[in-house]
Length: 389
Image 1 (cartoon, rainbow, N blue to C red):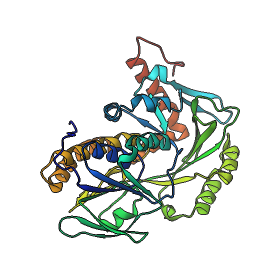
Image 2 (image 1 turned 90 degrees about the vertical axis):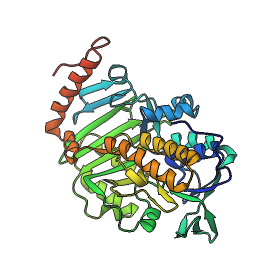
Image 3 (image 1 turned 90 degrees about the horizontal axis):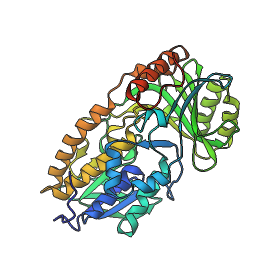
């Protein structure tokens, strides 16, 4: 679908709440089509850094259309593959990018979340009005333009408001009360930055500690290491934890995990960027209501497990901007947007809860053997697996 920069909708006011990947991608495409765009972000300043993400398939096509693919490659974090290790840091199995290709466990376009968002933010230039340190307080869903009152006290009308705040969006809950029925996947994850250690290199190292726990150490391009602590258990209200409660939870579950757990927990004590996620998928019967729409994780969160969230966020923004630029009305555009994105998101969100069990100690060897065999089948002409099963 091509974006029509000769849109008859020039001057139409659109509000986007959330200045990360989905929000900034949408803002860029909308201004390209002549819309008047405002982005509001509750944090006081733009947030760089964050955890590792990747862009695949159609997401890369969107970047290419924006002439940003090379910039994203230049800011890549340089992860060269994945290595599974035992408690003594001995390799159980390894998958290098050069063997598995761009669609393997490590994608060719691996980048920190904030770095990709920064590229997209910069692409908006001065054509988009960004307001940091503010958020939506109330929404008046009247006929025609939607009335928005902001936390700072200002009230304005917009022809469309798009919620791109992520899986935990408070604005979504205010506008669509009781409509979200999350599918809990019985996995909790803590992401944070720690000092780089002697064993940290270009590989992502993964240690399965037993009892549904695993530790991931991933490289970045800033001289530090990105740690991920994973716990497999049914949720018991942890999504409402304070930061101190989140840290206490992770300390309790990884105190006896072995390997480099103590080093990771030491880094947890001083980190400033802990992101704690109780993994769930969004399940909503509609993504729009009058002149308000959802996009990105706020609409269809596939979870980090699916590995497709960033790509879906960029595709969704591209599709929504395209439909708005060509439709006769906002309502027609939103209807078409939902039709297109429900097909895409449903295909990429479908996997069983049992997927996480592949990280248990007793199953990881079987999984590794299967992956080696598949990689060999796909790349027989280039290189063979490093180890046989």
